[in-house]
Length: 150
Image 1 (cartoon, one colour):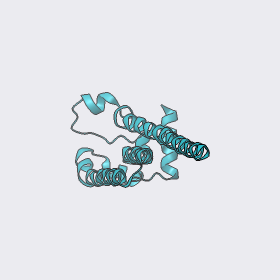
Image 2 (cartoon, rainbow, N blue to C red):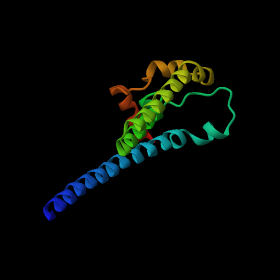
Image 3 (tube, rainbow, N blue to C red):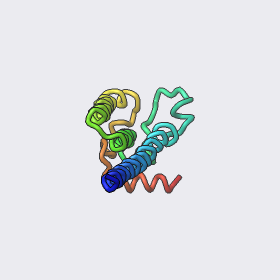
Image 4 (spheres, one colour):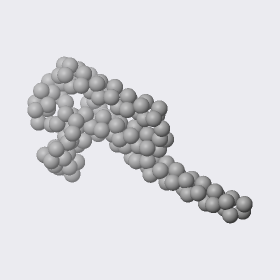
């Protein structure tokens, strides 16, 4: 009786440690991706030109993380949601997180095809020189070079 109780406690403790480790690991990843998302959306862009000045001829920003790919926020958004799924587990949560990533992806397709070409005069050139979503060797070099330059 005592031996089975000790074994049960030992197994439970191991499972608890595994859950805590998973929560800490994936939680740290989710926080890192969230920090990258906030940086990309609010701090990577020149603040005055982006949020304060009204400008009819607007140029797409092509430096820093926006040299990496045209929609870097989607990468960080997906990473955060996938880490949260790893943290919480479960198929219901997984379906929700995957649906959020899917809807966000559809939204950036709309932006890339219609909204941004209407908004930025140089967006067609930006599309030719910068990958849509998945960075390549050249775009990574461009991103790192422009970050070092700042």
